[in-house]
Amino acid sequence: MDQNNVVGIQIKDILKSTRLGLFPLPTDVSIEECWTCFCCTKKLEVFAVLIGVKVHSQIRVGVCGYCGYMGYIDRPAKAWLTSFYSIDWDKEFMRSATQMKSDVVLQKGGVKGSRQRAFELHRQVPVDKKKPYFEIGSGYGQVMKNFEIAGFEKLYGIENSKHRTELVKKVFGFEIHHGDFGSREVTEKINKNAPYGLIFSHHVLEHVYDPNEVVRAMAGMQDEGDYAIFAVPNVAGEHMNYVTLYWPHLHGFTKESLEILFNRHGYEVVVDGSPDILNIIFVLKKTKNPKAIFKKRDDYVAEAKKRIRVAMSAGVLSKGLSELLWDQKITERDNSSVQKISGGFFGGIIIWHAKQIISWIKSRIFKRLSVQYSLLVSPVFEKISKYDAFEIQFKKNITFLIK
Ligand SMILES: [Zn+2]
Image (tube, rainbow, N blue to C red; front, side, top):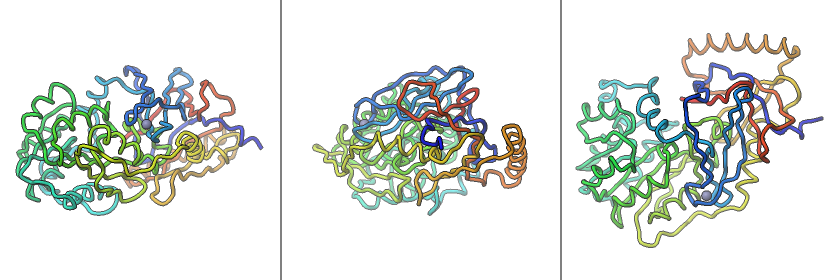
């Protein structure tokens, strides 16, 4: 058979019932190229290329051979990104003041339990609660409120979303800055209350324009002996389809890469509170001679190329239309399966559209309950790009998954 010659897939359609929405690459976004690993500064290697066949768009995804960091080489310019997070980002999930007041207790377990776990870690280190606390990406203020209840006396934060900033000020009375952490406009204001005894950040660093700038800026706001708690998804366990198709996550960190980034700015990992293969939660301490504890590997590039093939079921894909099913599991990295769609090309399309309708009706009834992703795909035997990388083609335009 011809499976071994599969060099990519073409995504014909994405089933609309999935938990995430669809986000076609906007025509108005200016794209920048970035070949440098944000963690160790070495050059990235391309392991996947997304291609919009009809509109001739191309987004390359890279991996760092030295530390395992993964990220988009072609990424939105800063101005676009800032405005996206300021206004568009959580349009669909806005919370009200009433919800914020009644929902202070951090949820235990499950996906959302990661906030609670990260919060609890502060008890494992001798943080000085009299020193100010600062949160990067303070969201709806839920974690900050918990730190206040835990006895922290002065609490500050920065948040990119405008309406979240306003709500937290109004509902909890915290001093929150609206803007981009690390940018000159806000740094001066934030520096006024430095040094901070504890800096907290939950699932923010993977979204920011420049993680290196963020860590550099925070290092300037802390003394030796101060602490930081950072939580991010772990790219070593995250589904590769998510890594390649979810644009808001500009960065994918391994434990090794995140440690290198913090080591470079004078932090060392003192507690690894990561609960599973999907999440990294570190407690870091600012110190004079930071040491590394995680061992780097030498097969990050080969592994990324292998993983994307597994995630896309490239080895079992045969000619014609198939349905590619996948979901994020804690127990099984990059799980995926294919179901051949019979009935020839046109019959297949009809079956797919019937599925699409059923799935749409289900999604109306069960809201966003379905977590299995379903793509209509066919194998690609000839690449358009020149890279030794897996090619993910879209008939018209590149379409990302989005919250
Ligand atoms: Zn690197």
